[in-house]
Amino acid sequence: MSQQAIQPDADVPSGNDDAMIEVRDLKTYYDNGGLFGGTPVKAVDGVSFDIRRGETLGLVGESGCGKTTLGRTLLQLEEATDGTVAFDGVDITELDGDELHEWRRNAQMVFQDPHSSLNDRMTVGEIVREPLDVHEWETPRERRQRVKELLATVGLQREHYYRYPHQFSGGQRQRISIARTLALEPDFVVLDEPVSALDVSVQAEIINLLEDLQEEFGLTYLFIAHDLSVVRHICDRVAVMYLGNIMEIGPTEELFANPSNPYTHSLLSAIPEPDPTSTRERITLHGTPPNPRYPPSGCPFSTRCPARIRPEEYRDLDDELWTRLNTLRSTLHERQRADRSVRERLRAAMGRSTRFGTVDEIYDELFGDVEVPSKVQSVLDEIATHVRNYDEDEALAVFHEEFGSVCEAQTPSYHQPSSDSERKSLCHRHDDEDYRSPDDVLDQRHR
Ligand SMILES: Nc1ncnc2c1ncn2[C@@H]1O[C@H](COP(=O)(O)OP(=O)(O)OP(=O)(O)O)[C@@H](O)[C@H]1O
Image (tube, rainbow, N blue to C red):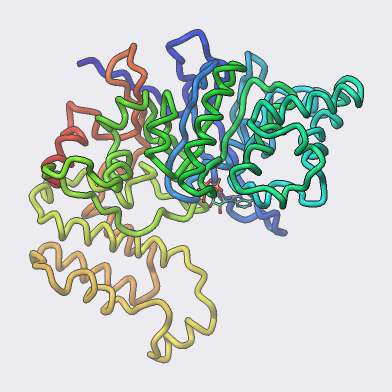
C-alpha cells in the first residue's frame, strides 16, 4: 500500500475540482491583548481542507477543540491569524470594508440556541428581514413579500410575520433563524450545533428541513455537532478536530465504520455499541484536553493517546502502568502551566497542604495499586525529586528522556492510504515501516 505524506502546512490537493471553499494552514489565535501580549489561545492551529459545492461536511470533537472558532473564521466573523480561506478562488481573509460586506451575503450561520439568538423585542418579520434591510435588497414592499415566502419555505405561516419570538417553541424559533439565514440566498451555511438545544422529537424535523432546503437551494453546509449519530445521518464527510487540529477527515460511512486515527477511535468508542455480541472494549480517554494556550510538543493528541508509541525497551510494559505514566505526564504539564500563587508557595514551603497535591499523593493515587518495575521506579524517584523542588520543566525533561517517543518529539504528517483516497489522518503510527498501525495496537489493547 503506498502512503503519501502531506505536511500539515502544505497546500493539500483536494483531489476534486468541485471545491467551493479551500482552507489552507488556517490559524486563529485569541490574544488576550494584555500589556505584554502573553501567550495566545491557539483555538485553530493550522488546518487545511476543502468543502465541496453541495456537500455537508461535519465537524466533530470535544468541547473547546475549536469547532465554533473555525466555523466563525470561515465566515470572517473571527479574524484569521494566518493562512487562507479561498471561497470560489477568492481569499476572503484579505477582504475588508465594502468587499467583505458584499461577500457576507454568500455565507451565513445558524446558531445553537434559538432562545438566545433571536432578539425578543423584534417581530419575526423584522428579524428575518434584517439582513435584507442591511444589504438594501430591493424595495421595502418586496422585502416584506420575500420574508413571507421565506416563512412558508421553513414551515411557518405568513401570519407569523407580526408575532414575537417568545410566542414560539424551540423548534419554531430555529425555523425563524433558518429563514433569516436564507434571506440573502447564501451558497454556504455554517450550522453550529443547530439541533443540540432542541427536544429529541423536534431534532428530526429540523434536520429534515435542513436536508430539504439543501436540495432545493443547492446549499453547502458545515455542520458542527457533538451528537455523532446526527452527524452520521446528515454528513457526506466528517472532519474530526482536536486541540485546534484536524486529526482525521474522510467520507462519513468509511470514517465511522473504520476509523484510522486513534482520536477518532476514542471518540467513536464513546457511542454505545449497537451489536450486543461485540467484544470490543470501550476506550476511555484519560484526563481532559490540554490547555490550547500551551499545546503539547509533537502530536497534539500525544498526552492522551491510547496508542502512543513507546520506546523499544517499554514495548511490553503493562498497559495499565503505561496509561498511568501518561497520566503523570499530563499532570506534570498542568502543574508546569498552573499559576501558583505566593500563598500556595508559602503554604508549600511551610509544609502545609496546598491545592497542588504533593508528589507522594499523586504517586500513591497513580502507582499505589500497580506493580512498578525497579527501572521505572528509579525514573519515577528522579522525577519526584524535581517535582518536590517545583521544577516541573526538569521533571518533564526526565520523563521524555526515558519514556518519550516520536509522538512528543515530532509533529506528525498527514497520511493518505493512497494518492486518490479521500481519507487523511494525522498520526505517526501510519508510518508502517517503523510502527504498528493504530488499528493493530488498539485492537490488541481493547479487545
Ligand atoms: N473570544 C475568545 N477569546 C479567547 N478565547 C476564546 C474565545 N472564544 C473561544 N476561545 C477559546 O478557544 C478554544 C476553542 O473554543 P471554541 O468555542 O471554538 O471550541 P468548540 O469546539 O466550539 O467548543 P464547544 O463545543 O464547547 O462550543 C477554547 O479554549 C475557548 O476557550
